[in-house]
Image (cartoon, rainbow, N blue to C red):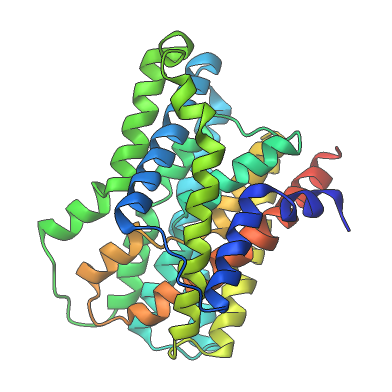
Length: 321
């Protein structure tokens, strides 16, 4: 087995996710209270945002940072169009649901990114701090593309300011960008005071959070009746294709292996927090049983267990390391 893939599967964060999946499959009553799970999610976003801001304060903003941001925005905007075509032609999904699902695959999963950064760091492929900013800017363009695709050629029912507030001011975007700004302003000296909290306990909290995500993903997949085998197959093939293209693009613009892999992971991931909230407002007729199950219960586990390792291997191979 490839050493990168082996390290991924034997990482404690991945093993806790597998434990959660097994517990759900065995119908165990294991569960983490929702309030605690939400608190862990907030902690992870603050920690990754602050550490990214500190890293950018140390390295500064240059052409490479701007290139990565530009590629991330472009990828988030364009990926839904390819996903929409595959969902319509191969999975035979109707226009509304295809547009809603496509938006999820153009946007990003914060937890997938956080898990990837930890695995890549262990593999000696550290991710540049500014990739947190790329993560943040990749959430919104896909939502706009998905709404366009779902509503194209139909009478439009505008959700008004509430929709755009959800798109541009959803909790994850505000918290990530806000924490990133705080880290950037505080710099290494200011971060040192809170470093034991946001760095020392980071891996432990991530393990607990992924335990909960494993339980949730497996239970939703077992309960779903709307996701067909073709949709499951696309939930695996789309992240493979998008992840490979993202890694190639990152390498092409000169990113180091770790950052190119991180861009690939972002392109491969699928949102299950910000986009579902936006789709609920913008495309209420779309079926959450399809788009949530695909993103959370098919693509998320695939990326955690297999996708991150494959993307890391590709980035290392492309860089000649």
